Image 1 (cartoon, rainbow, N blue to C red):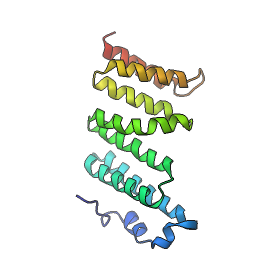
Image 2 (cartoon, helix red, strand yellow; image 1 turned 60 degrees about the vertical axis):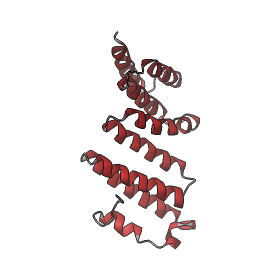
Image 3 (spheres, rainbow, N blue to C red; image 1 turned 135 degrees about the vertical axis):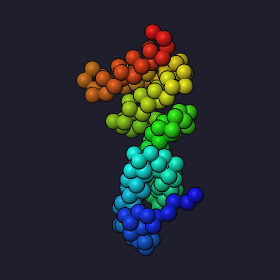
Length: 168
């Protein structure tokens, strides 16, 4: 079903902006509407309305692709949020398909989310009992970390989960 904006005034009020206010010097308005879609989707996800949440994320991706396709960071952020929803639905392969879409972008742009993305991929592989894949991605994460990285604790936690899933 198509997402109705009537139940969400923040979206309804921003969707009525004329196209002239969604381009050129006003491209920032696109980002505001995109943030509104993401906010509503995240809220719905927290309420357990995962399918409706996905509809808003998909609508947001279509919107970004149409209005501001060069905004890769926003697009990738939505892919990560979709992966989170699929992980919540225990659809780990689908979750990883979205995480893998953003992994190269995150690593090549030295994103602070690179290690978190990888660790989510590892956890999904653990849930699928694909321990070889988990270990492969753990090695990638390890190579991105230094001894003062705040993600180090998360890395060791996920590494322990992987060892446990392996039977150690």
